[in-house]
Image 1 (cartoon, rainbow, N blue to C red):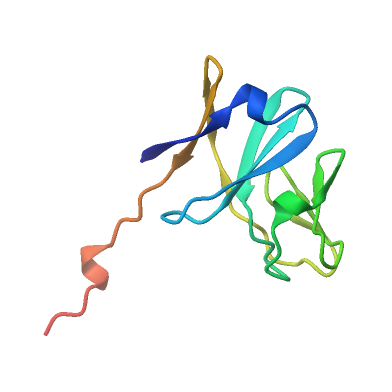
Image 2: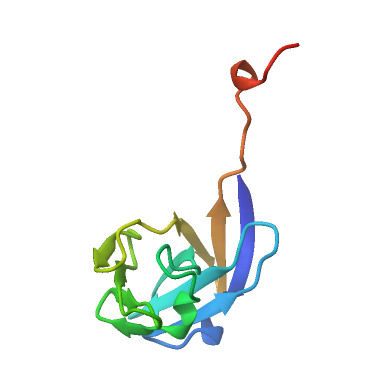
Length: 115
């Protein structure tokens, strides 16, 4: 598991979202909902838009392209036309630093073709 630094608490004011560019794991959207931090994949599963450019309504993020919605804590697609959930990341907060826990991809040796 990788512990990825995302931002400082002050970088994401209350009830806002911020995009964190990350080439290795894909861009991540970091949300501050009433002092509780969450992280999801930044890419909308429907229209490939940046969710960090959308609006927060309660605990939902609204895609800026077709106005579909996702539940921020779970990544569940909640509003048409979005039907595929987005990935969420566990968050750790240490002082003023916010981290995402990224599960490292492990290849099952039984799935490797043997020649």
